[in-house]
Image (cartoon, rainbow, N blue to C red; front, side, top):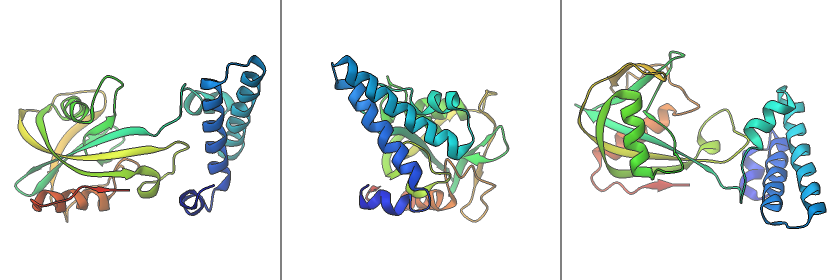
Length: 213
């Protein structure tokens, strides 16, 4: 376990062990040609899922579905979040559970950071934007709770609004612009008040240098 993970998972060492076992098993399954080694790596993967199932209460099948469903060398997932401003207020979208977030989501396999940001904003807010500046690339497990059993790089992108209007969709129920001191209840697993304040700082600083973990 490296020093970063030791600190990050100090209260949940079993989660770090399960993540490492899963990553090792996935790599072994991707590159090993020996049938017996393949069986061993598959069993290691099952053990990692059983560890998570035992500690989280989720069924082994559910854990396998979300934790052991990839192939190839394991890398972090990418999540983009758009920061869109009007009159010193930031755009947030209301989730179906009532909390609010910056428009965004997982980067699709056929999308870049830029194109995915544009796509997610359109889908969740109905607005058309142009990404103009990278604000930050953050390790999600360092900044957001709950800690996920896989790595996520969160990419915050400053955007300029060029048109559009909100349209009913399956992910959000409305949009709104909020000042830095009037933020509504946030979907903190997606964005915290601290992350949104970072976006305000980036928008007001023409010399902003992208932050990264």
